[in-house]
Length: 439
Image 1 (cartoon, rainbow, N blue to C red):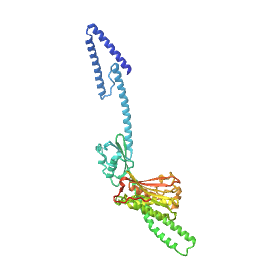
Image 2: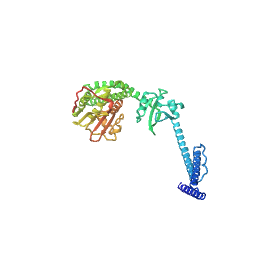
Image 3: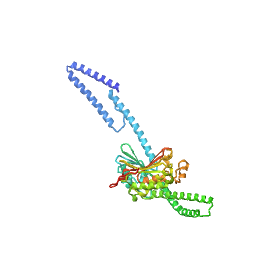
């Protein structure tokens, strides 16, 4: 390009020199230069017109023949067009392969523009959501009208997927996962989770039914064990045997009660149980029960909670969750140690914490503590304390029903802190309450 520019400047200089000589010969140098410049400008305009017609032509033809810098311009533009065409074909091939790949998926894939309108979808989307080609450009919420999906879509918080009945067939269960990309566009993946949903329902029904069916024969067994253990004719060996049977039947009864509670938490509607729950009286009651459980181990229960703080939720469920954590602290703390139950609030959350001075938990176990029947140290910790392995699973489910989550901090030999963190819209500061704290 630089060589072409140099050659063009030389051509202009040579043309100017000829005009000067011709003007000197005819005595009209100025007019000769003006006429020569006009001719040159006319030639430049002709080249620009040829370039415009060639670039705007839909036919991909070689560039017009010309000389000088304009020849190089035409050649460079032609090479750029070739590269652009090659890149365009490559991108089109990638798009076609991507569309063919998504078309083969059983999951529905829907692309939305920045306004939430339909841009593209695969064949599975037509099957699961009933989309048709004429629907392109319309908002997705026009076709999925479930209030839960509209709230999920508008909230723009897509960390977790959403399970809802199918808009075409309520017997089917669909899972929606939305991801953002580009400049506000969204990718919606919809999969049919009907089978998984049914299996989960079968599991819940099985646990509930088995727990109910076990309760009656267990009650009979416990009655006979209690009656026979009171016989004055028992020798020491039989007395010890009946004591062990009584302990194991009590543990089985606790396990059945926990399973039933978990089943109820998974199936009951939480909305109807919402009420304003004052935390100070509840924590005082839990502390008293924990002291009774501590018995001769003489734990020091410390409650810190202002009397004007209240939570919105189910009083029975909140009491169960908080007492579970408090009783665990009593079971796993050394005698004569402090156990602190405290409530703290800030602008964004309310936190209920149970802090003990027990043996602590290895961090490797913390992520799995809320799993059902998960046991630390091969189960010895739970078995020695008489636990069922379901307490923290119950706490987790209760907190989820109250838009809260459980945080666990623990180090071996330094105790543990279990914290229930509730969002701002879940707590209230009551008026006309005497503010006090129990230390």
